Image (cartoon, rainbow, N blue to C red):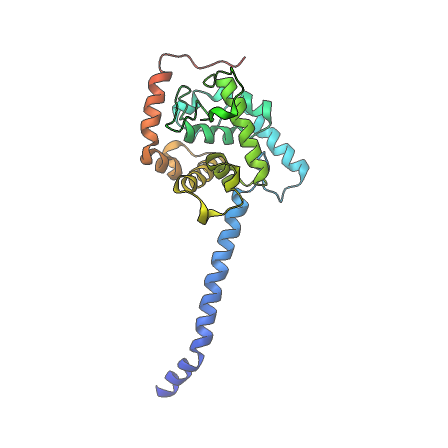
Amino acid sequence: MQTLYRLWLAFLPLQLLLIIATVGMTVGVMAALTVLLLRGGVSTIASAESSSQHERMLQARLNRDRIAPVFTPEVQFWSPWIIKWARQYGVDPDILATVIQIESCGHYLVSSPAGAQGLFQVMPFHFAEGENMLDPETNARRGIAYLIGSLQRADGHIGLAMAGYNGGWGVIPRGWGRWATETRNYYRWGSLIYMDALAGKKPEESEALQSWLNAGGINLCRRAAEVLAPLQTPTTP
C-alpha cells in the first residue's frame, strides 16, 4: 500500500495537469461552438458558409410569409410588416422580430424614460426634423438602419450586434466586462431568443423568452396587447 501511495504522490502533478488540460479544452470547445452559433452576416448565416450558400439561405428566410413561432402574439401581430421590412432592407425577419420583442413587444406607441420611441425604441436624435417617431414605417426605417450598422460593426456576430443596438456601437469592441448589466442581458436574451427562433421553438419552449418575460417583459406585452386589441392586423402597403 505504501508503494502505491508513493507512486500516486509521484504522479499527482501529472494527474492535475491532465485534469486542467481537459477542463480547458472543454471550455474552449464550448466557447468556440457558442461563437459559431451566434455568428453570421447581416443575414446571420455562419461565416464558414460560402457567399452563394449565404445568399441562398438568406433568400429562403426572406421568402417566408411569417416570422418564427417563438415570438409572443403582440409581435406576431406585426408579422406582415416585419416580413416586408426584412425584404426591403435585406435582414433576416427573425432578427427584426427579436429586437421588437425585447424593445417594445409590439407596442408601437411606447416611449421609454430615456426617450426611446416606438416599435424599435429609437432615440429621438436618429430622426430627421418633422418625422413622426411613432409611425411604424418611420420608426422601422431608423431602427433597422441602426441595427444594420451594429451588425456590420460586429462583423455579423448576433450577440455583439444586439449589445451594440442596446448600448451603442461603442460597446461592441469593449468586451463583456465593461458592459452595463442591461447590455449584458440584451446580449443574452437577444442571442438566445434568436437561436430559439431558428430552432422553430414555441414561446413556452423558449427558456430565453420566458426569462425575458419574467424579468418584466410580461408587463410590456400586456400594455401592448391593450393597445393592439382594437386594431386589425396591419396590412402591408
